[in-house]
Length: 237
Image (cartoon, helix red, strand yellow):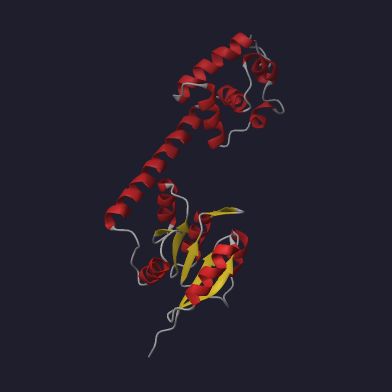
């Protein structure tokens, strides 16, 4: 008895790439494109639709409403029996590592031959992987290093005083010492002292690096300058 075809969800916002690929995959006897999506929102609608079962999701990295990694993670949680692979033109190994950590069974380039993509689908549907063991270990090592860096940043952020977080928020806005003083009701000299101490605590060498840290960790200046937050510090010189 012939087994049923592998049901594929193809997620890519570029229809000029997605539709021809879907056509070619449908020509394979053991594959069928069960659904296509051009965004995370469209793909999520397919995933929750019990009338459209999915065996393998082929997901692009960058979609109009977010990273395909998010869909891969959600699919792993809600459909443990389904497999996914990242099909992307992006060469960022760290993002590839994050996709694997999120649950992808492999990563393949959009420049790959059609035969490689087809073989990749078959392989991960059978429980295998596209990458070699050595490649997988290297990518997972990168993912682990990034996670450790993120955890270290959160520890550093948690150790900042309310005033230091205020100053960090102003650096995010690119303010100089005088502007920081005006916003926080302190003198430019006091502002400079706070900045110097903050840079040391963050272990960065410049205001720009501190601003990047603030952006990456969601520190907004408005969080720390509204309401009564500044009033308790107005006694500073």
